[in-house]
Length: 448
Image 1 (spheres, rainbow, N blue to C red):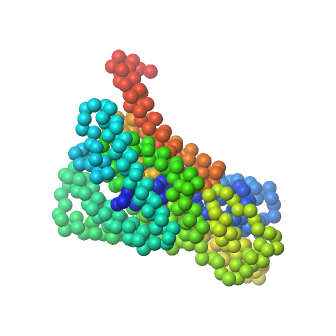
Image 2: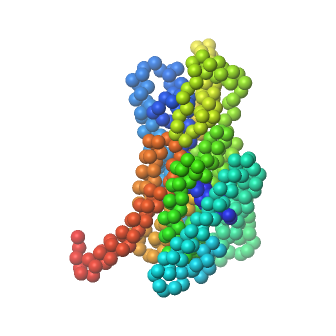
Image 3: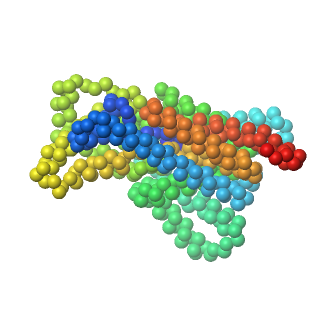
């Protein structure tokens, strides 16, 4: 679902693609309980409102810039892996075998036939994605976690062992590197087992992110190889429209998934989401003790209920976040009150701040990585580096605009439409207009 965004029956990373703000993303609005939690500590330590506002503005700028870079780097790495593979390994540009979801192979020389073949293939593939996405949402809504985990584990096993084995074999064959089967088996076993642990259990954050990037690159290469020529471009456009509907529609499946996860205070599955911070399944809120609940209830009764925010967060989630906010605020106040008597022991405050920093971040569905890389990889398969670079830059510009909208609206947004639209426009403009114009200038010995 790539935020949960795109997925076929055997490829969970494609269940959708949406850009999801973390529950603790800072906001300028004081109606967000997560922001109130982050602001309580500075208010206890500093009483100057002017300095506090300046610190908040500076922190927001640093936070936004840092997380833009944290998404640009992995997206760029994924696209570069795909482009480097397409440029050097001819296996992924050879046609002849296609996915079962694309029964029309565009063999006819007639342009009209190719067009309707591409549209029909894209419609069938989109239907499969919609059905599997809805099926995943139903499993999650009714808490069938074991089935979901089994599905994701089987998909990860296929990608990390079978597809990775094929990829390594083609790379070794391309560069004429000899390797015995015993060493190959040892490498693949360790690579696959470590990948399964990193994705589905616990591992260093950078290792987990590296495996997710590699898995997305493998899926992109599979699509480039097994999708017919024109179908690939039609699928990119159709999947962007579907992403827009699935995330922003009131009854969109991906919106339902995000809201359900937030209402339950649960993280989305790491196998479907790339997070710029910790994404372990064990990272959940655990600060709802009976003392904090009773304190929060008393203050709510005295001050009246707060109006829930509308940025994609349900009232139930806001209430739970507010309870955690009040609990942490009281712990911070207690620690500040004990500071004169026990100054050398500020660990509780520090731990809360560190926990808050770890949980902040932006999440991007693996489906976004996949289709970004499909577009750039497909453009690079034609051998025109000007077109490839144009598509690369267009996708990054679209991602930057999406992050800007995310900062404005503060809710889950689809990450494919803007970037893919820019990428398609840049591709056809560069390949059909700019490149022929540049070739004509070169042939006429004209330099501008």
